[in-house]
Image (cartoon, one colour):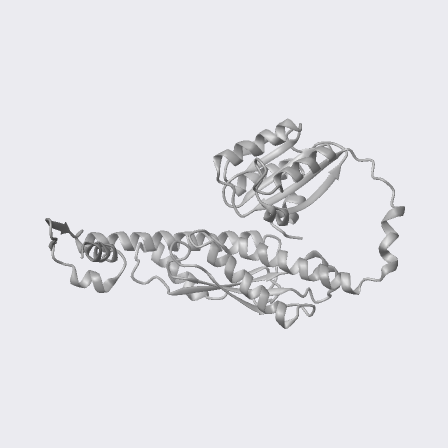
Length: 348
């Protein structure tokens, strides 16, 4: 009986039915041993707290939509209805309604759902398909996303090399990613996971069709004499303080320059001797049984590498504040903005 009473009080915060019947200020539960008295919070106070939580979630949703549009369409000047546009808001009226609710601090008219779509392609897709074939996703963001509800993902279109079975696999894996990220802004991670899956399927398709005589083509290539290398790594988040400290230590021990941006997403870029860079990547991709290892899944987040004749990033590896704008400015000042866009923002 005590537990039922506690559950009832918990429900007071979340269900309108409970709110309607809980206007009394207290109730009494009689136990075999003692009498206990429980007090409800005033209904108005609970309602105000729920409204505040709903507006906080809506604010995060709107800010994420604006950030995704800025990131995915930074260089795009195409028609709003172009199916190849990187990111499109489908529910324009709902988004305007959401912004109005935020401006007026009014939680009563929060839209039930906002739909957006993203077009995801790979470099090989862009090179091999004249119509820039790729995957088109629809992400439905319900009221309460991202705080208490997850995004719902629908795959609207896939390239020709994706079989029906693979289409279903993409759908289930992307929805699983969305489910895992409840409580966090998930759209960038969903798009990144889609690009990873698409790249794997594309590579498998290319391997099946590739002629065997190409096997020895790389043996005759000259050795590139450049002496500085960069490795770009992106992961959904880096928040653990011990891991953050260890990343800095491992990079500095190898005399590598670059930076770590913790938070969401987590970004690591190391620059220096190619062998030292490779060694750092081996360390960070180590399994969880190794000290400082992050698990094998990190291997999917080593986005790319570049080589130059001289360093372009700060020689002392450092941790930056959790701000993608600061990171973008640093990359621009260091003349590596193109790599940042390609490997981290995944734009071409």
